[in-house]
Length: 299
Image (cartoon, rainbow, N blue to C red; front, side, top):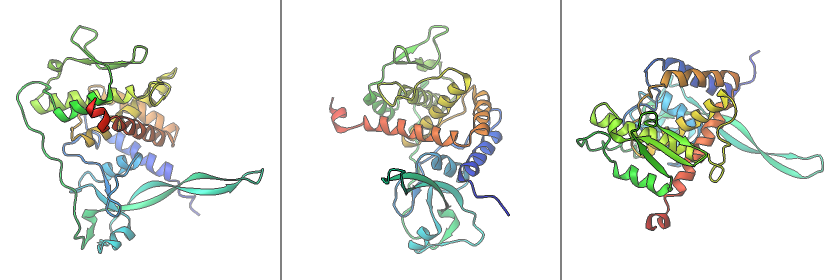
């Protein structure tokens, strides 16, 4: 008799396989152009947390990121194609329990669901997801993207640029609470790659910035290499979510392979690490998005 289905292990195994495929400079699923956040066909809400990563992974060859369960597609008048394989995602259901003192409480229980892409159904006549508009190709190294600059400015993060040898690298200084970035002219490649590389790295550091005790309070960075790697995974997911939100293409970092090695080690030892990292990344993105209010815009 087969063992009980474990959604945590199933998803973790999928992500480990994804990371093991992305050896050397091979990209991860979120390192590609025109990426959009996955949407549910019935609610039109965005998926969140690790479900985003799973749908990006399994939807790499799909025409758009529109998903739904078998029943949700049926409710739209569509039919899932025979033989189509669903993608497992996780959701949490509130379960009631009675405490020893007789009081009732609720706790979240992880449940699995399987969703199918719009490319896997027939008869769907609803609206699709508009593809991300290509960004203008202007001349210059790491030139400015106005919408990304506005988003970052509204966060209020202190950012300094440096081209001094030894300081010409990206990092978040927790003690003094600022982000250090290489000057724009230090980003190489073609025009688009230089520009988007700059913002992808800045969004990574901005995710670290949210971990300060005055903000999301993630207890940066811990005492050992594994704690550091866990926070780096949070920042990787955070930057991926933000890049999709801002229509910025991510590219593999120069230290891509080394980070993959440390992340795989974490995931193989802890099947829930992935879920914590994606949850914390989602909280970081929500925090940064909350700073984009009308009041903040007017300030």
